[in-house]
Every structure is written in structure tokens, then in C-alpha cells.
Length: 123
Image (tube, rainbow, N blue to C red; front, side, top):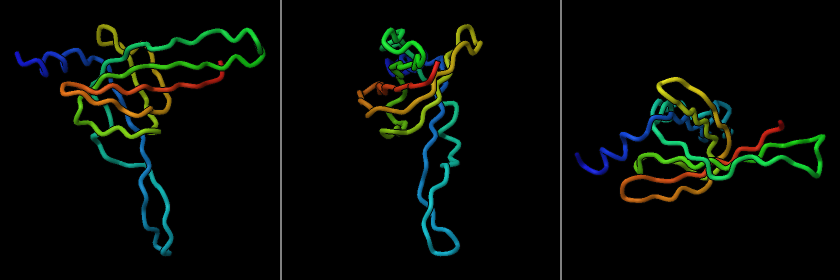
């Protein structure tokens, strides 16, 4: 088995990329719309925790969730910095967790790429 095939076999999780593209409106102005490309949905990936959320002891009334999740995926998938990412983690074929946030700048290797998902929510 080729090494790239072995690496891709570890991608049990799924990633959706939400990206906005510029369009020309009928009235001559430009706008933005969500990219409808089907290749941006259900992309096989591997989720790894980079920095778990830590409890805010300074302002307990507003306990915001700050997490960094590392995603591994095929190096041919185009991920742009600030793309909105939705990553679903699966265990035994069952979705157990969803992470939602913005993409950091991808780091591309020969066999894979790493993308850090920055998640910020209010707990």
C-alpha cells in the first residue's frame, strides 16, 4: 500500500468549508455569495486536539470557549485562511462532536496538510 493511501485511510472525520466568492449583481454592483461547490462538503479529514478549552477564572460570568483544533487532510484540498470550517468527529461511524471556527493558514506537506481551526464560542 502506498504511504499516501495509508495516510488517507486515517481520515475518519468530515470537514465542510464555507467560503464566500464575489459575484456580479444584475444592477452592475458586486456582492458575495456562499460558494456552492460540492467538493467543499464532507471532505475526509482527521481531527486532533491542539489546545483544549480552559475555564476562565477571571470573568466567570462570561466563560468564552477558546479552542484550537488541528485538522489533517489531503494536500490537494484548497483551504484559505479565514475560511469558515465545520469539522465533525466520528467514532465507530457515529458523529460525536462538531467543531466550528475559522481556518488558520494551512501548512502543506507532500502527503497531507495541517490546518488549525480556531473556535471561539460563549459557553
